[in-house]
Figure 1 (tube, rainbow, N blue to C red):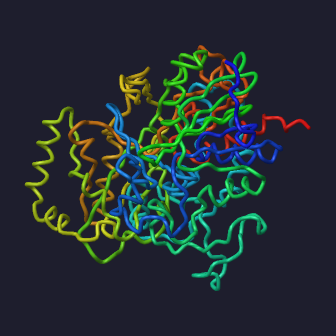
Figure 2: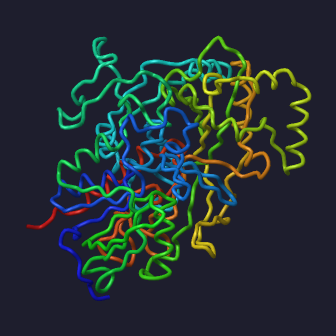
Figure 3: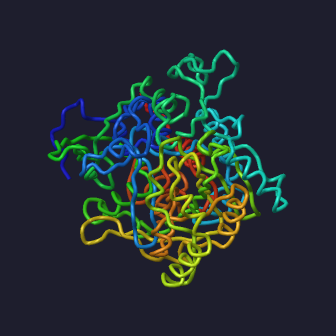
Length: 532
């Protein structure tokens, strides 16, 4: 393909598609190596005052730009899984609970990447770097939901496996800092001014107090100081290699993502970093494979993982404690060698999720599930009436996030309309019902005097939900076994890298954000500095 005439101001060494954990790491490290970098992000810029004060403010919380909803939370529904993900400058860090666990050893020795490297040891320094950059600290204050999980841990004989979560949140270091804005506490003043956490529980609807270490306050902030540009509210539509396998660079077609009549632009870069998350990167690469980049591996879209998750809400009519108090995820219980449980909270006033909940009742088909749900309602009518009359759902509820490192996978492909569709891959599909999660949820409900609920998509359609969709562009020894090599390089093309959740090549069984950042640090460490 011949290179079109492009304004020199639109030419870059690297264009990074997406600003989540992989994209933000890439932007900073490439800028530090002397490259001219542009980050393209389809979501909006958000300041603390821009976030929704509750999840009922759909315009600022939900991402559905066709309806002029331009918030930070995207809901995606497929035949085999429902996905919660983040949108905006900072990607998933805007909606994540700031929890930063290191996976168990099995993660580094399983999946597509097993044997490509001594990952557990190779990645240790990069995990340490990600910890430092994200300001990881132990949660210093438990809320009522955390104390309830501690009691569950005692009941199952796992008290030693209960502990405070390590999170990327700024906590007051001394009493006089409480309620005050202070100079950057993480990067010797190079970062933005910060205010300490007020334990309001609103981490996932957008921290209103400037305490959560979302990526716009660390990696992206520092990348901008090094000259990186950020183009928000812009979507990449097409990427066309110049020369054989992109040796002469890439032409990148972009357009506005929040306008009904979008403007279009053409950019050019020597290299590309795909960092739009598992959903965004896989969809874009599938489109490119059909058109301008046919040499992309046929393994693209395979190995989609859901972290083997369950999301179960427990709501109590009791009013003695406020379950919205604390940070979004303040504690962790390793319920058994394979399972990981966290109590998740939203800030007071955020009760939107109650609209999608039904009493928990699992079974082999929808009729069995509906029958068990009806029996549950008939056996405990007063309890459910009291719960239905609760005004402030977040103050009375905890969402239990259950994860396992046991593996299961799906495949993504393009449907007739150009959107993503899921289908079964090798091995068992992700399950909506995990017996261990159900048992723990019932124990937790007993501790708080409440009842467990799950999303209607699980009850009626038997479709599991996940907040951590991973894979689809996994690592491999060659194009027959993976989409990228062990250094994150896209097979078949030069100066094209993948750094986001789509590269995760095994099931971590814990919140994956730290791992995405650490592996991206490793990939960027393999990129040589800009010559000259």
